[in-house]
Image 1 (cartoon, rainbow, N blue to C red):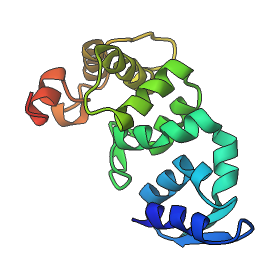
Image 2: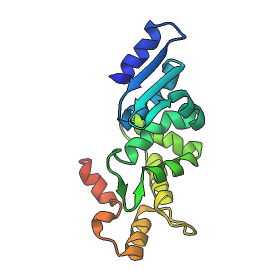
Image 3: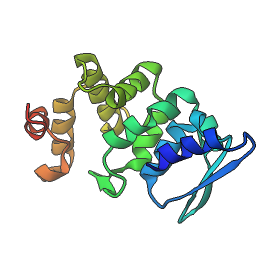
Length: 173
């Protein structure tokens, strides 16, 4: 609803108006960035860490990455999860920054589509592998990544990325 009212604010107020959204929630920040083109030119979010200018974030990301950002945010888990197998949001975001249009399109499909294609699924699997794979080792398939992580750390099963079977069970497939 915050985004909806922010968009309405642009329609109802003079073009030189400014908007400040007060929210400690990263979800709101992500949605503001993704929808920046529908908002006032001067839109900020006031968070616990301070005020963030949405135009600056949007400009630094670029239109494609900004629009696909909610896909990354959802895909990399809730913002209060912290870390999973020593990988947190910062590492996911750093990898996202270096992605090509094909991967960004796949993140956009996670937002725009009710189902995902095999190609999108493959792109997301490759992205996960790039996030978790150690330097100098090229792993492109989730089962290979799981095996590598297990062998390397002899990790407990709950510290490993989910299997394809687990994902199917969770989504009722």
